[in-house]
Structures are given as C-alpha cells and as structure tokens.
Length: 235
Image (cartoon, rainbow, N blue to C red; front, side):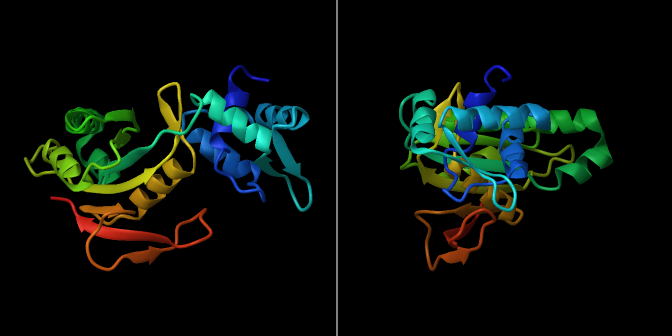
C-alpha cells in the first residue's frame, strides 16, 4: 500500500453512508485533497482496508465502499481525536478561466495570490485560518459564531482586476464538524461547502445558518435531503 494512502482514504470516506460510494467517487474525494493514486494502487489499498475490517466492500452490482464503525473511529483518531467545531468558508473568483485566457498566466497567478493574501488577512482578523488555496479558490475556517458576510466582503475588497474593478466571488459558509488532519480538513461538511460554493451565483454567498428571510431548500449532489440555505449578496 502506498505510504499514507490508507489514512487519506479513511479521512475521505468518514462521512459516507453505509450504502457506500463507488471507486470514481473515492478518486474524486482524494483528488480534491491533491491525492491522485493510480487506479490499481487505490484498489489494492481499499481491499487491504477491507481485510483490516476498516472498510466494507459491497460487490453486488459494482464495488461500493464505506467505512465500518472501526474505520470511522480510526479516521477520528487520525484526524486528531475528534472533529473540530468550526465555520467553513469557501470562495472562488468568478470567470477566472475567461480572465486567464484574456490576460495570460502571469496575471492569473497574480490574481490568485491577491485572493490568498486578502483571505489570510480577513480570516486571521476574526481568529480563523486559510486551510488551503486551490488557484482561483480557497477553503478557510473561522469561529462558528462569526458573521461570514463581512469577512467575505473584506476578502473581495482586497482583490482587484488589472482594470481596477473588484473581483466578484462565488462563496459558501457552513458550520459543521470536519475532521482535521495535518493542517487540512476532511469530511461531509467540507464536501457540502464546496458544492454550495459551486452553486452560488456571481457575487453571492450561500449560507446554511443565520440568514434572513425565508430559506431556500436546495438539492445538492451527493446529499439525500435538500439543504436549507440563504442567499446573500457579498458586499
């Protein structure tokens, strides 16, 4: 088994229901954290976790993978013992691909760097931390009671295009209990905030708590029940 891969698999699957997910979904979850094992190496690692009674493999109608109770407990131990109670923030720059095509790679790197610097300042000011940068996007955590709108407005205000125009953001916030491991965060809550960020309109925050007015019940890929969200303009 590749060094460390078993740990990454356990953390990636910690939120999966007993029905399990297929190998493509396992690969997608690992890829989201910068891990891209060959298919044969991944399958070998999954089957060894089954042998260790940390993973179940349903072979009826295709392979489906899910953690056993022992596997979930092991994931918690590897993640620092317990999930951490935080508010997750995810944001990315609107129309970044088109911007890169129009202005080139150097301008794109500059824009991504400005986003990271602005986010680091904004979340540190409220006692949070940027977990990772993904080029035109990032994942951060802030204390659960933090109002996300002002943090994201400050972040957006620190990002300017060459024209001087402020970048618009897609953004999402969610209070949950992700698993911390080696400075990264894993689990169902991270997957949810990422999907909500993808669903946000330009210049919009999708939040799962603390909004005003009537919430919307949004169907989110990978989640059985609709997610209650509030839409809010960043600015």
